[in-house]
Image 1 (spheres, rainbow, N blue to C red):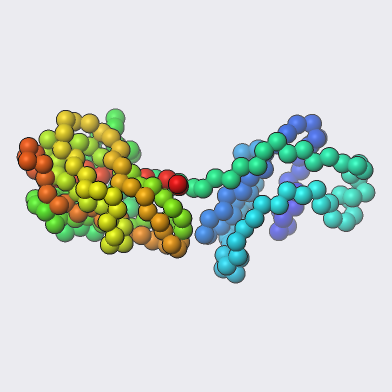
Image 2 (cartoon, rainbow, N blue to C red):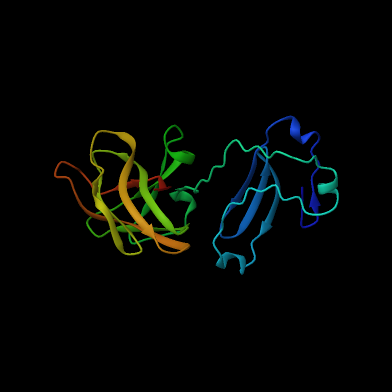
Length: 219
């Protein structure tokens, strides 16, 4: 195949099925052959203005593709699959702001990347905000954290809008995914995910919240 002056030769192509793939986001497009990256290009700004579609065609063009290809030819397709990217980000890697102290919890066995953020809240109103990039679409948000007997209750919001019910992290010690809820993102761009402490369980000895990973999965 040839594109933008780059060419790759594959011997005896008809001998077996092959997989062709491309990954497209707001910045670049990457082409794959049998799972191996072959080429990547920055997307011109004008291209981003138009929707994409899939075209599977046996168009050969002119010259050697036509003269050297048997007639008739058969184009066999086993499957075509389209996936939407998920966004799972460790909070320790994201830009953040907070009106309370954030400590680091080290746990190489259970925390993703070995560490997690601890919002060391001392009362209702303490919060932490993380900024991450999302593409337009419908997403379901969960976050990984650690339940404990000194944890508080937290409300999650995105760009100032509350998402899902208040989450109580009080309980016996356990790492788990806390289900926040669904959110529609109208445009590609950065979003602010805020965790605001709203109180604590009557049995809890504190207000702290553990936030390890933000998980946005397509709906």
